[in-house]
Image (cartoon, rainbow, N blue to C red; front, side, top):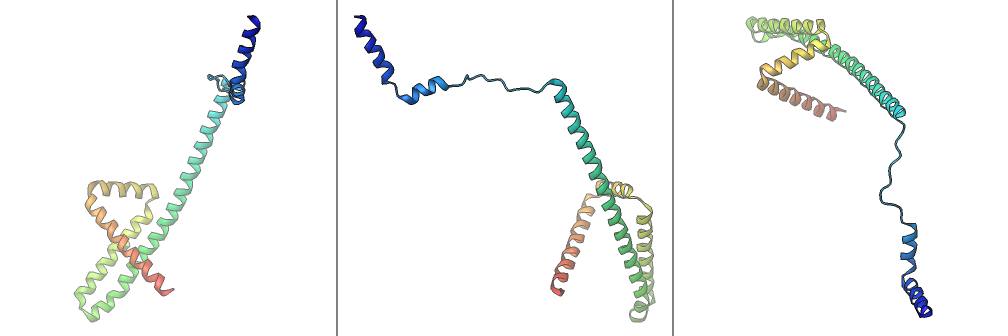
Amino acid sequence: MAETEKPAAAKKTATKPASTRAKAKTAAPKAVAKAQPAKGKADNVKSKVKSDMHDFKAQAADSVRAAAAKGKDRATEAVGSIGKLIRDSAGTIDDNVGKQYGDYARSAADMVDGFAGKMDAKDVDALTEDARQFVRKSPAVAIGAAAAIGFVLARLIRSGGKDA
C-alpha cells in the first residue's frame, strides 16, 4: 500500500502548474519593515532642510523688496511726470477755457506733486501698510480703483500693441 500512496502524492504535486509552484517558493513575506535612517542622521537632514528653506525664504524676501523699491521709484517718477504735465497744460487751459479752470489744473498738479513727495518719502513697507489700511477702511473704493487702473492698463497695452 505504501507503494500506491507514494505515486498518488507525487501526482498531487505534479498536477499543480509550474507557475504556482514557483510563486510559492519566491513569495516575499507580507510584513517587510522599511529601513529607517539612524536617528542622528534624520535630525541632521531635517535641520539642514529647515536651514536651507529659511535661507531661501530670506533671499526671496530680499529680492521682492528690491523689486518693490524699484517699482516704487518708477511709480514716483511717473506720478511726478503727471503732475508736471498737468502744470504745463494749465497755461493752455487758461487761454482756451478760462483762468478758473487753469487754477483747478494748478491745484490738481499741486496735489499730484504732494502725493509723489509722500510716496518718495516712505519706504516700501510703510506704503504696503498704508495700502492695507486703505483697503480695510474702504474696500469698495479699493476695488473700484483697482478696476479703473486695470482698465487704463489694458487700454495702454492694447494701444501699444497696435502702434508697434
